[in-house]
Amino acid sequence: MECEREKLKSDIFDAHRRSEMLAQEVDEQNTRVERNTQALLHKTEGKYLEQIHELQKRFSTEKEYLQQSLKTLESQLSIFKEEEAALKSQISSLSQVYVPILLYRYRCLWK
Image 1 (cartoon, rainbow, N blue to C red):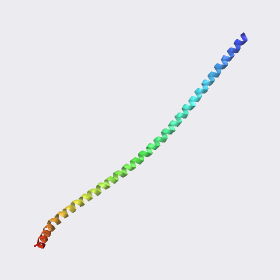
Image 2: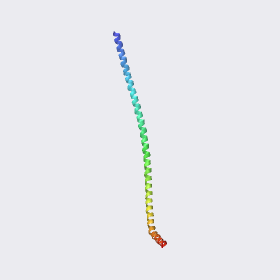
Image 3: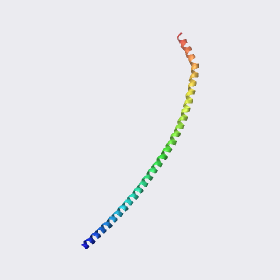
Image 4: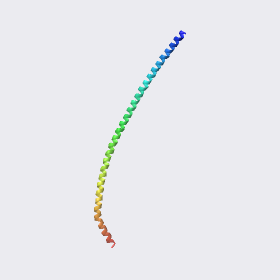
């Protein structure tokens, strides 16, 4: 009976030692997984930060281009408006001169 008791103690001790080793292996595995996850997260964050930076640069460049284009178009619009005003003034001046002449000619033709 004493022998069986010693055998059971030994088996329990071995089982306890194996469970401690297994727990340690699980902890080490979890630590490795956590490190790998953190490394992957860091790498992914870096990748996306780089992409965001590149997009911000492109946006800034496009914004500057569009602002310059807007200034150019506004300048052209201003020139066109000035030309339109000048042409309207010329039409008005010509109308004041030619309309009476045309009316006179029209009257002469129908007499």
